[in-house]
Length: 99
Image (cartoon, rainbow, N blue to C red; front, side):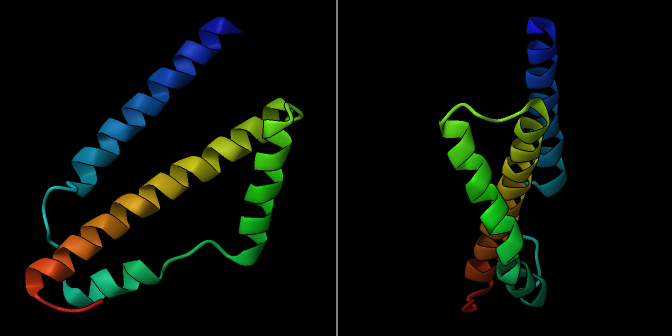
């Protein structure tokens, strides 16, 4: 199992590096329309409830392996969403436009 954990950490690092190159968070390239649309993206209520359920169960140490994977998927998507929102806010600021 330890090997899989190391592999998993390597995959996460690779994903972060790929997403960083893809979205170039240091650049401010979104049009105001795209930026505003990205800032409106949110998890729906069902997903928020599921994330909360998984987080609570995880804190208690009661997640199955599948649930750990599901929670990690939510975390990755959340990080991607925050990366996109950050770039959107920077794009709007650069354009001198309010969100």
